[in-house]
Every structure is written in C-alpha cells, then in structure tokens.
Image (tube, rainbow, N blue to C red; front, top):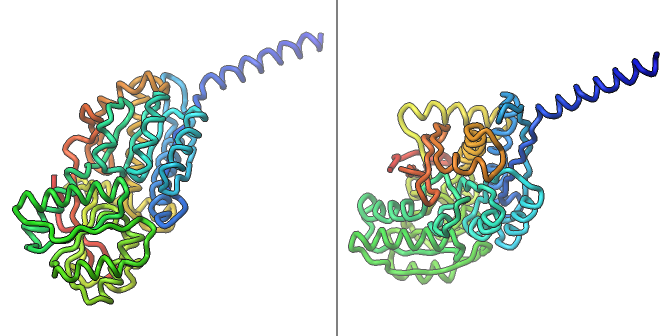
Length: 379
C-alpha cells in the first residue's frame, strides 16, 4: 500500500516538476565590450546597461510563446582587440546565445559580425559607427545609433559653419572607428570648400604626440579633429596645451565622454572641445532618459559614461522581437527584429534594410569646467 502511494506521489511530483520546467524558458543574451584596457570604463558602462535591462526583464516576468522567460547575461571582454573580439564572438556562439548586444568598437564588431551571421544569431551594436558594419550584406547585423557618415559629416560641416574653421587639421588612430569617423569629417569639411591643411596618424595605445602636434602647429590650425577614443584624446589635449596650441578640438562619440576632463587633467578651456554622440533625445523624450540616468546611478553608484542607455535599449529590442515572434529561436524572431517598432529611452527604434537605425539622432556637446553640456540635437 505504502509503496503504491509513494509511487503515485513520486509520479505526481515528476509531472509537476516537468510542468514547472516546461514553463521556464532560459534566454541567453551575450554582451561584448572592452572591460579591460584603456577604455575599460566605456566597456563597463555598456555592460552595466545590459545588466540593468536583464535584471528589469527578470523582475517583470516576461513570457515568450506562453512560457515564462528567465534571462541570463553572458558577458565577454574583447579588450577592443579584433582577435579577442572574434574569440569572444565564437565563445558566445558555442554557448548558444539567443542574441548579442555589442561589440562596443567598430574594429571588433565588424570581424565578429561574420561569426554571428554564419551562426544566424542577431547582433545589435549600441556604439559601432563605422558604415562598413551594416554594409556587408548580413541579415543578422543591426545598430541603434547613427553611423559615421552622418556623425562625421555633421561634425565636419559644423567645424566650418559654426566654428568658422579655415585651417583644419585631422588626426586619427588608424582603427576602423577612428579612421572612419575622421574620413567622414574630412568629407564634411571639404563639402564646404575648405581644405584639410594636415592629416596625421597615431595609434590607439600611443601616449606621445609631440611630433605630430608640432607638425600640425606649423600649419596654424584653428580646428583639430581627432578620430579615436578618450583615452588618447585626454593626453593629446594635455600636450596641445604644453605646446601652446589653442585650436578648437573636435571628435566623435569616442571622445565625448564624462571621463574626458579627468583624462585631460585640467588642460581643456571652456568651450574648446566640441564633440558628438551618435544618438540623442529631445523634448518629451528627455524625461525617459533622465529617469534612466537616475536609476543607473542608484544601481551602480556612478554616472552613465556614454552608451549604457543604447545597450539597455538594444537588449529590450531583442526581447521585444522575441515576444512578438513568440519564440527566442534566432531564426524565428529575426524577421520580427528587422521590422521592430520600439520606443526606448534613447528614442524611437526602427531599422532600415541594412540594419541601420532610421532617422538616427546626433547630439552635439561641449565642456565647461568638468561638465559636458549639450549644444543641440541634430537629425
């Protein structure tokens, strides 16, 4: 009798356990960024944005195809290095992630995108702006920020129209991002019939710019544009001051961070630096971004650096596509992702045929004291 009862109870427990198991759907979201190296502060900022989204999604109790989803973040460090980036991508593919947000840099996102494409795994970069990233013909490749054609060109025209640049010099770090944004900046300047008086190159790990800055100083530039990241821009600004170069200093999103004043160590004069972030909100949308920034600081104890909100939105966009498709299977939700219509903290998100965000915004900034100040949102 007892044996029979135990068997029935055991069977019932097995059915219940099986039922509970059937209701749980584990969804793995990969994130890749440089959480080591000179721009680790930016990589950690991106990763924090992903963690914030994952934690909120789990707290909401999202269902996909009638099953309660449990979201897991698989975070990898690519150190902004293309080889490490492809290794990280392969690791996520092997782990059978359902989608990827990243990488931070164009130089790692571009080679990694082939690996995700071959595996059929959707990838949204929240910060890679090189045009090539979405122009390789991959159906799995998306970004939720404007590209360098828009960003670099806008900065180039701004240098002439608003900063009244006549002698404009350009430096870049030879990375996919740095060279790409510098090339587009130069095109924007030249479209205004102004010539680039000097074009110099460095690398993303350099610390001494005396030779290239001395060469540029001889050409008496009123504007110097740097294509690269804040870790190099800061020391470059210090050395400009040491050499008595008082030119306006411009750059793309890579230098447009909260950390730049610290890296420049007091060498920036008010209004000297003008930069742009590939994104931005205005009007009523500012409320959502302000709330996000406050929640981020409460959760992590630090201010947003740059692209955490775009990472946060990218994670939510992937999940919104899964919910709409009723499946976390990449092949099944990819068509829904391509047609997504989503309002996030960074604004409205919809993709064109290449995977680029439609009507992407650019926000122009300058610095006063140690604070970044918004100049304007441009579309």
